[in-house]
Amino acid sequence: MGRFILLVGLLLSGCQGYHSASSASIPTNNLFDYQLQNPAGKTVSLPEAAQQLADADVIIVGELHGHQGIHRFQADLLAQLLSQPRPLALAMEQFSRDNQDAVNRYLAGKMGEDAFIKESNAWPSYRSDYRALVTLAKEADIEVIAANSPRHIVRCIAQEGVDYLQRLPANERGWVAKQLTLTDDAYKARFMANRHHGQAPSEQQFAAQTTWDDTMAESITQYLQLHPKHSVLLTVGRFHIAEGLGTVQRLQQRNPKLKIALIYPVTTDEAVPDAPLWALQVASLPTTRLEGEPLPAFSLGEPACVPVGD
Image (cartoon, rainbow, N blue to C red; front, side, top):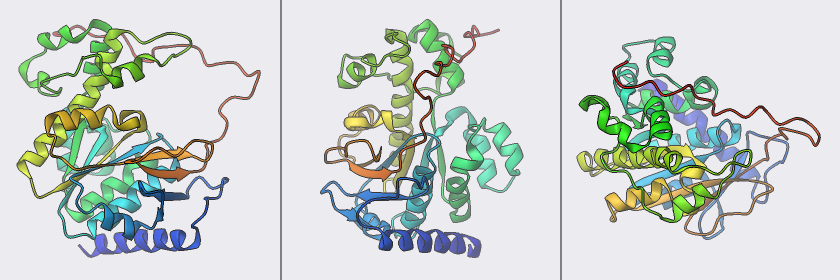
């Protein structure tokens, strides 16, 4: 417990020093800094934010995967929330339900980090992006919810459609939400409007997308049913919460009474989101491709779906 208090103290002293020194704009060349604005457009410190978020049942921090400032903020916010009286759990898009046991065993000190990364199928960027979050949770002895559905199942839904789920063994079917939201809602319209190399998404690809959202929403809803006094902090890609859609809608469908707070990251060249979203302002990432440089080769990036039973 002493090590946890030290970790929280170090994180909070660092973030408070930053916020007291900056109230207008973040340095555009510093990818580690951030500035938080509440829905009223007021720049707030983390202690102020934690106080304003005290009655939220679910706090969702969207992210640009790999952005150092956003990942620093996630750890700073978790440390601040852990100093509040309300019990807390951490839910993560970055781990899937089939690996919950590996997450639990690591938190209980039953395996080292190398084994944990392998057995939990952790994202390749775990050590740089998510180690601080999980370490804080481990030291504070709070639960980490492996909220997502397994990638191999989502991949098969994208290739074969939702009927694929009917062929799964019962235990594997439980790794995906019981109910998928496949209606023509605003989230689907937003997803289908995206183009990758000029190609529009298919119905099956949307089914795969909402599999993530519905599964994360169900994971959090089920946890709060068992732990009604807790709040949950969820880390997830920002597309899943943009405009209050995606995972947020799926949560509200399952429990309309939940109080949900959304923290949406924007870079210095992007517009601040409208209320009720909070704005997490961060520096723009380096330019990925200069004019005239070739696009990367187009690939779905995933192997073919392996039939059930093979």
